[in-house]
Amino acid sequence: MREIPIHYQIACVILTALFIWSFSVAREPRGWRRLFQSVFSKSDKFSVNKNKVIDEALKRYGIVVAMIILVADVSCFVMGVTHSFREKARSLSQEQRESMNEINKINSNSGVSPLP
Image 1: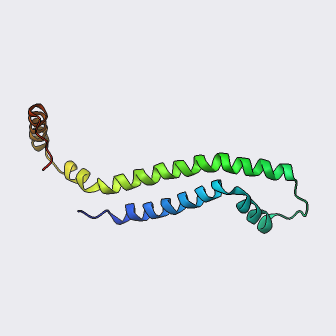
Image 2: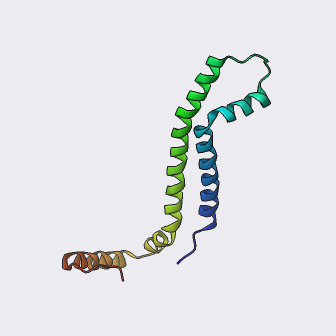
């Protein structure tokens, strides 16, 4: 198996960490809201209704953000896995591409799989 380029590996690690963090925030927003309020909030009074609205918004948007990050993570992984194949296809000449297309057409018509 060919290696995945390092920039794809780094991006996958960062995106996976972001996904796990955003999913944990969306899954349990109360603890994260309390942590944020204890660190950054200056007022001593907290409204229960306002906190519920904040928790609901964190859940609603947190799941959406987590899923977007997950899609980007999977896309990055697929791009990394297929990188060597794309580079090989890019380096082919026009004649080589045409002959590969003809071979693939013949194999698809005869029912023979092009994979070994």
